[in-house]
Length: 319
Image (cartoon, rainbow, N blue to C red; front, side, top):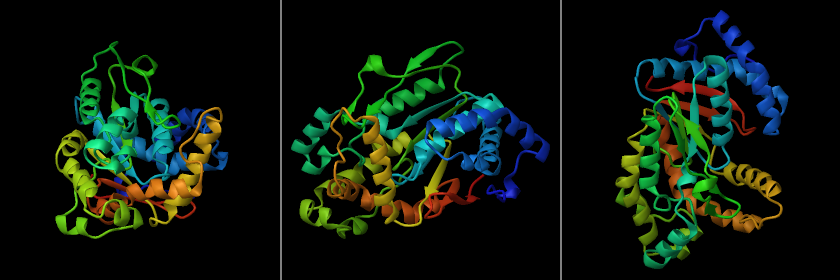
């Protein structure tokens, strides 16, 4: 396989890539197995993950602070998997410590979202869109991680999608300072608000029937203009996983939900039918389509995915 990473942005010599490969291949393949990913995809270690990690290492060398990297991508695009593999290579090949936080992990509680549904609009009962996250918690978490000193330990939030609820504080994972790179991933990370004109037009039947008065979509947009803008201002670099089109999401997210359901067979899972999944995804459609149109011109790094879900091309807009 040819190198996916753009050669003009290579920061490692061939001998250095080979050395990084030797340091990381065993851990990388072990992680692929844990994630139930075919071992043949270890070819991406040399062609993508090592150059990507080396690029981030170079950025980290230019700051005395934790580097905050946002990864944006539609539902099922592979943000979480990419983040895990990237963090592993950063550690094994370059001895850089990293922490991964998903924007999903700072969802408001089910009770809080229920209150929003009562006070603002019923569609806010469903998690996902801007307004359903605890932004103050996210800002505090990122800022505290950035200031961790050697040996200091911090707990950070986790969300249980199977139960549609944030884990209790004592169940949160921990990290130890200092942290070199914080990976903040999520489907709307770094998203920009829409114009008033864009908000007028329905994008699906959910909006047409459940948000005919535009209250929900306008409230979502106001959050993007205010508190989410403050959260996203903490990002040093933004990465965008570009899917072929919106139609891929139902298939890819369906596979993701099935894996999640299989892991929690003793629990009631939200996405128990294709109909439920379609309605769930419809909540995200407006902003997902907006990002597919504009994010390639906003993100520092764009990773183009094929219909086979594999990386096809990487372009760097603002190195």
